[in-house]
Length: 295
Ligand SMILES: *Cc1c(COP(=O)(O)O)cnc(C)c1O
Image (cartoon, protein in one colour):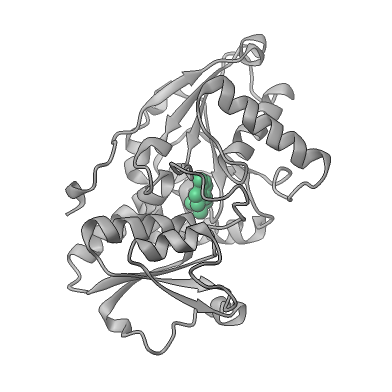
């Protein structure tokens, strides 16, 4: 079933260049998981794969999951549902929303996903509306955070020759991707937080009890208004122009911004080889420049 999806796997690794890198004596490589599929991008595919395999053998009728109004996770799930003809349900945070509230929700609905809008309170309790025949649906937790999500990252880790890199850096939402990487690779793992959720991430990390510990950077996470926000925006445009690698400013743009900042501060010793994971989140037509923080 999965073979029916046209996925570019393994995703390529490419080196990127900047006078700053040569000045500091380091080399930077990018794992292009954004190229896996136009809609099922990056770590969203990585985290969902295991669930699709489970679904295939489950005898269930469809798949249900949770997300915010801009959820990359639900976009990926809706797309998989469309291509593999699997009925999908998205439980969306915010009862005031409709399928026409933004382009992402509209896109999910057009892909055939049934959208259910619930209040923030209900969402916190992961309350599933009573008209859904729950036993017929495989339920995926928000953002794919679970032991299965972590296990799914093994496929990504297997595509990385760990001898080649001293550091691996990636953006963090729920932390599933990073926890998976640190479980399956012994490199130094760096995580750039998108949200101010270090406590939750630490709890998740602890819950998964992975072997290797992760270095988290929280200082890039608060939505920096004013100068910082403008600086980040400017950095993203310059980065994409220079490298021809598209980024958005919530996850991957921020991660590359942080990487640049760490290089400037000489965090990495001379001679270091760094692999940055491009976790995706780039769509053929950017649905909205106001991609809210979401998993
Ligand atoms: C969801 C997402 C992340 C965060 O992944 P986690 O495994 O939840 O930490 C990072 N980058 C992009 C582009 C994402 O869509």
